[in-house]
Length: 246
Image (cartoon, rainbow, N blue to C red; front, side, top):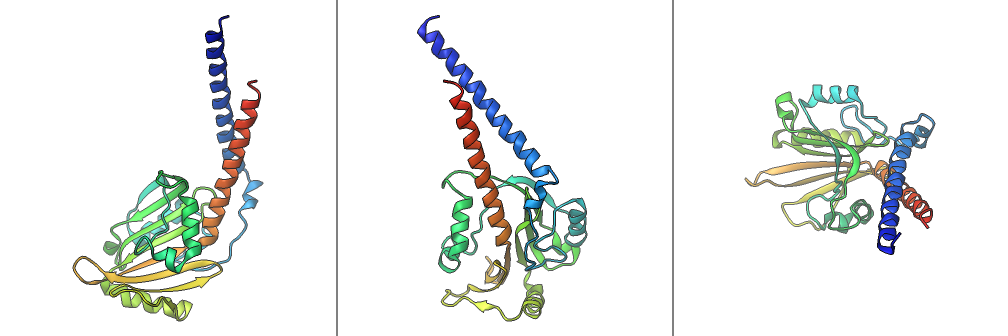
């Protein structure tokens, strides 16, 4: 057999082995995270902030989705999505919540690439028709533990005072972020590493608009650790497959 033909055969065999290795990683991942034994990896997290009956340890399923639809109206759902923890401005969390900014960087590495994660996203755009004072609600769940990663809620002006009073009564007086340029105002609560952030700024008509973010930081870190472990295992499997070629 000539050298050029031999090189082509070697290249073809290498590709086949590499694809088989990647397929093995995918199947292993599905088995690893669907088995009852390994579900014990997802230990109970501290309970922090809630939205209706949704909390740190709520697991997404059809019953949870149905209950949310009853309260918030019909939803739109998306599987696999980017995760962007930014709020108010690109520099906001970098300045006031550097640990959250560092987490956001890791979730979006390498930069300038579209990084998608194993998630389930619920979006509610017609909540006001369900008689709740929300213009928009977005809930992102982990595709591994099925627990919430963050909630993003835009509150209508007429219901803002009621919502803020309810938060103050439940969680106490928040910490205020000083030195913000008007009309932006922000305050926050921390509980067991999780973060609840309320921001007030003007909408395009000059009316105050309230935005609430609940960051389930413990679940976000859990997701990141799982992805790092998957990446490590994938690299090991590819290396082992490549070693067998020669």
